[in-house]
Image (cartoon, rainbow, N blue to C red; front, top):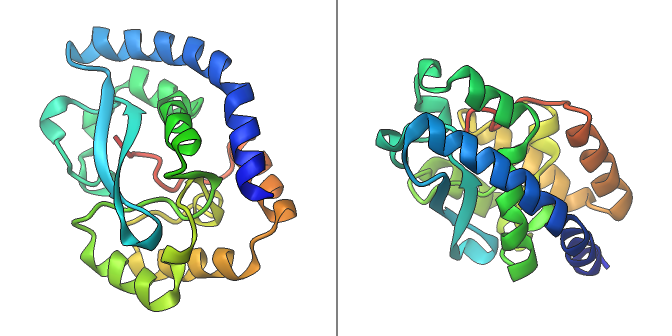
Length: 184
C-alpha cells in the first residue's frame, strides 16, 4: 500500500514539481554559476548506495560536506528561501518513482556517516526505504546527532503506518522541523 501511495502521489506531484524545480534551478544557477542539480551518493534500504538529486543551495566547493558541518554563511538568503519552501527536495521525487526512496522514511545518510550507519544497522533501520521527510525531521533532529537520529528512525520503522506517514507529510508541508535544514 505504501509503495502504491508513494508512486501515485509522486506521479501526481511530478509536473508541478518540475515547474517549481525549473524556477529554483534557475535561481540556484544565477547564484552559483554551477550545475543547479546537486547529485550525491547516499545509503538506502539494505545499505545499498544510490544517487539522490536536489537543487543546489550551497556553493560547489562544499562537495560532499555534510550540511551540519557546512558554515551557515555558505547558505545565502536566496538558498534559504529555496529551502524554506522545500523546493530543493523536489527532485527526489525521481528517487521515489525509481524505487530508491519513499515520501516518508528515515533520511538517507552519506556513506561517510559511519557512526550513523552502524547505529541504524544495529536498530534495523535499513529494512525501510529512506524518505524525503521523516519522523526525525519533523522533530528537528538531523545527522549531527547519529544516536538520537537512529533511535527516532528505528521508532518510525517499528510504528510506521499510512496514518503516521500522512501526519509526517502534513507536518512537513506546514513547516514543522528543521532537521536536514542545511543539507545541500
